[in-house]
Length: 445
Ligand SMILES: Cc1ncc(COP(=O)(O)O)c(C=O)c1O
Image (cartoon, rainbow, N blue to C red):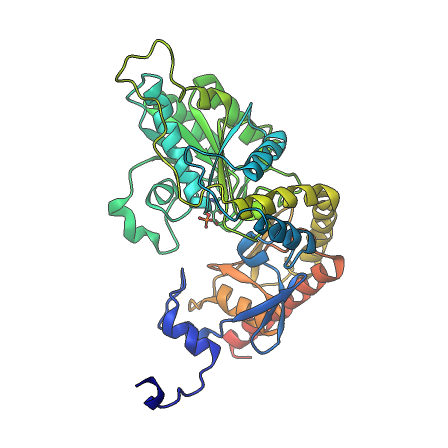
């Protein structure tokens, strides 16, 4: 019967995609009209679409690809691991490459005598941290600590727990009825954020299990930057009160800020730390929750426990500690050192800052430029009548071969950490041209 079917008309990749793939954070009815790029391959810092067009990946494929694409050493680590084993479960058993990775991470994370639980996405790492914090107090015999303090403008992922500590926005307010309540104090955008957080820590001293923050930069809020001293102060207050501190470094971790971890820049030593995104250099889905010895030890059975006491953490994901991802993550960590990546971040960040100051911040359509290391948010003045200026500017940049993606009217620049000076200048010039073009178009000139 198959032979008698009429041949299928040839369809473009966008049509084929729209017919079958459901894209996150995307209105699918309009997907085809938004000129999406369908990537076929990549080389270095560039993505290549099905028509052979090249795009400088100035968002590191949503903040992941720290060293760009097709990094020979990471490719090799992956292939070598394939010759050993792709995956074996970490539930109750171990895997050599995961032990190697955990040991390597333990040497660099600012967490006291850490133990590391792996998962696959940033949101899952946050979810684990929230549940660990809750059970920590349960295991310590304190049953009333069931609340979390989280900041305004926070974003911690899309699972229901991580959404609950997030501050909403991005269309997620719809889910309010299924989120759990948290103690919410303002984010870094408010100069009084620390004062408010400290006050809440005092007021809710009896029922808070943990404080959840994105250290230094609230990235998804459009790069809202906190003062490192304020963050240190909050860390000290947590330590004094015993309330656990969860640092979500999913966006800031692995060199983005010019330090391997933003917590280090703020002198923070969190009880729990969440890692994701750049952990495998954008190769494979992996995330991790790092727990301090104090937290980990609360989950160990004690001789004095009664028969019905069970301190075990009943939680774990099927792909947690995937061996292929672990092999790549391990090699990635070495490469950050070998290639002197952090020095490059700091040098390019300085160049980027100068270029943004002279070519972007001076534009009438730009209200603010916020930058920390190689994390940048260019806030556009919302036009009247409102149009999606951030999206239009980003699309104009894509037309010019630079891949940008906005957060509302904030255009985000998050290039690979190995970005070169000429690429920095290209991104800034393309952004300038795109802003000027779109402002001229919207004013009808
Ligand atoms: C600070 C922070 N935490 C958590 C997440 C969620 O990570 P994922 O998308 O991998 O679930 C993100 C994603 O942008 C993030 O910026």
